[in-house]
Amino acid sequence: MPPDAPSAGGGAPLLTVDALHVAYGGIKALAGVSLEVRKGEIVAMIGANGAGKTTTLRAITGLVRASAGTIRFDGAEIGGLRTPEVIARGISLAPEGRAIFSNLTVRENLELGAWTVRRDKSTPLTATMDKVFALFPRLRERLEQEGGTLSGGEQQMLAIGRAMMSRPRLMLLDEPSLGIAPKLVAQIFASIRQIADEGTTILLVEQNTRLALEVAARAYVLETGEIAMSGESGALRDDPRVREAYLGG
Image (spheres, rainbow, N blue to C red):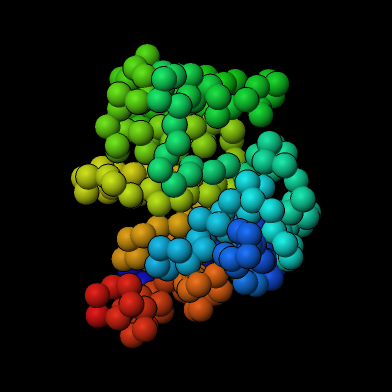
């Protein structure tokens, strides 16, 4: 293993999803998905569009309801909680497409990300914001600029920064490289590594399979709402099935 390769976390499970089923009307989006993310890990979910990756993240955060299965965070069942309650437990989401508030400033977007921890006086809001700026200095430069005027890469930085503002123990990242210039993708993924190194566990959904397997210690391959394969990233990267389907042979 190269010196800078991610290592699998050895801690206890922080997130456990077991036999999760989600349907939209009569269409099954997830058909028994089970996965585990241990404390300190970066774990990736990869697969084709429509495989169920985003639905899994939405179910974890309470944005969609599961018809069966359990979701446990730090040992407690969270499957029936509303999204604000899930966030208050210590989970945040940087969603696909970024979903920033385009008519609000960078500062206002970041402040909204912290609404669940505003009453926590142990760590001032400015201290958390300074951590965001240390990762993404460009956001400090754009602080009073409306979110909708930022470039795609800057909006992705803002989406991740907003997710950081609630001081999560687990961060869910949905397609952070989507529509981003390659130079900024490298910067964003370096920041993801740093966020993990500083103690935040990460579950990553990423269309760029090669990049996902480079940054994550372990990965799950989703196909039509089910886990088709899982394992350490290095082993999956060398698996001929993964290479043929997702890495171009």
